[in-house]
Length: 413
Ligand code: ADP
Image (cartoon, rainbow, N blue to C red; front, side, top):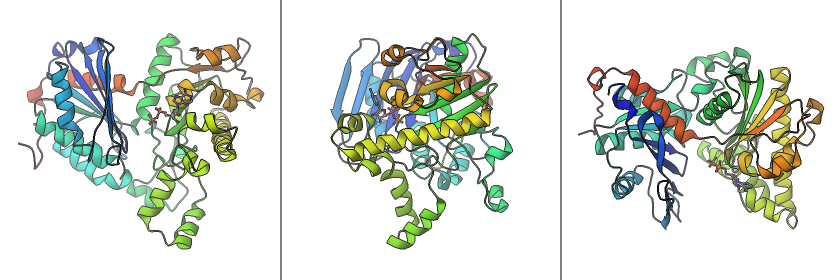
């Protein structure tokens, strides 16, 4: 692909979660008009659903669909692309949750890369197999599409040693055990938007709070991530929809021996049965809990623990930064819930942070008051746009497709 070609390209983005697959199609190469977006939901569990939004007409479609696994979404996606006249995809950008110790930048999807990612599967067993299956499936269905993998861990690659090292025997660090940090695409997308909004002058001591079903904070000093709440896996740090966040490691062995749990059951307990769902015993969804909190003390307590832990980590990372100039909220909760933003910020006045109540309720781009020493913003994290941009940037930097080793796997045609 030449640089000239990349100005016209149609790019598909694939963003796989543990039981979902978000997709988008961007037309117009570097100008990147989003043409289509959609989501396969509840993959591998009953009640599967597909939603598609046509950005050109504004039309939305939603249907129930049974989805065995992530790869089985590809033929359906192919039909959708044809239906919307978007079958001429030339490039694809994939979100890959874990890049291990070596992947610090987007990379062309090659057989060698897939081999490396397979070796990394134990690092992210709920995410990597699906992402690999999608890359392989797409290469079989559309061998001419140039694919690029973008790693969620890359944003945190340069963590200073004191934030990166885990205080366990050093021999594990040699095996790649370290604090990785996640949500890198979301953080990078927010950082680029902030860069544009501040005309290139980033606040020196910046805290990014990405609060969705998964949630984490990143402390960014002078443009560089210096600490983050997630650790070796995306289970650590804040309380999340179904993930516990940080817990005493002694609890793992206690529960394992109490209930004779094996590693898979332990992982399920902390990743799928905990967090807001575990505490409330009813829902992992903040909207549900807010609607129920006045009549159900478990819902109220779940939200209280969520806010307490988030505030606690905001305090910790503010100390790492040596103070705070700006706080940015993103993710489904951070972008949409004025109530949660208000509760999180209550008690942070000692930092000179005050919200403007009306701006907060309106969801304005800046929600702090004019007298606040800390600027508080809302920025929509757009991982799909970033994936498209990164895929095009890498591919256009490649002189020609012939210069790149051809993609092949054992099962490729
Ligand atoms: P994911 O991490 O899966 O991409 P999202 O970023 O979509 O998740 O965030 C989902 C969370 O955002 C859910 O807890 C949902 O309740 C919450 N959320 C979305 N809209 C609102 C809203 N208007 N008020 C409160 N919470 C909201």
